[in-house]
Length: 323
Image: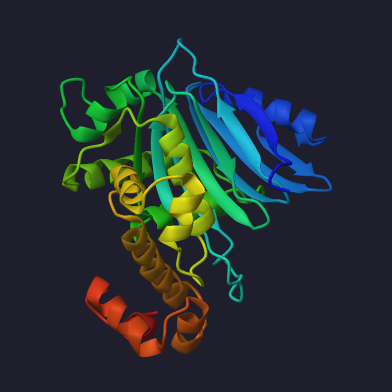
């Protein structure tokens, strides 16, 4: 199935043109705001709203039986910033699933060629926020100086990743809930998107490491594949020797390149994402702590509680009592 891939070329500057083409290719519908595709291998529901002609806020849910790859075709006309925030079906009511994808906030610019391969054979959900640099200037002081503004102004290829914290997650859930047509408030997509940008500004100011520039596209593609395919199932720890053999890199080089993008070596990143998944399951599901520890492949619940406390400063039972 991996060889059977649907590929589509699009531009981050004109996403609605890509949605129209995709709906036509896959026998779906696109009405300018809503795309629906239901065929033998793809169930995709997407909403995308345009504001001030230069900002698009999209909400997507998909379950596909084969990979979908979107190839970005850079345009010279306008410099765009893209924020993607990923969710999967590991929560939102699917309490018994054992398949997880790492969540995260991805920020990059439109001036670089790249491919995005979406997960398949799993429920996934994400939002996207696209806006032009010229529109961003309308909501910031011209003479202000901060890291996020410097990042957006850099027109060389760059990429940033942040883990999904509770504040951003809450804003994303508000955007997703607002898709309901009967209760929809279009302006909320715009205001919550601005709130997310504001939170990212604060995170970047507090971050010690600089943003990533001039990452080789093939390195980025491989590291994203490792993250999505091998660090997405918390029931099985990734085997670095197997990854080294598959990608033809030494373990030290794998960790070095992965850290250059995600700021942590592979296993450290995996364990951090795993304990954050514990937080989500404790706070958002009714599973017992024992069930969560089994599903996430901890040796026993006491081990999970110890790792959780080392990370958050209190035991998961305290978080459950609060909820």
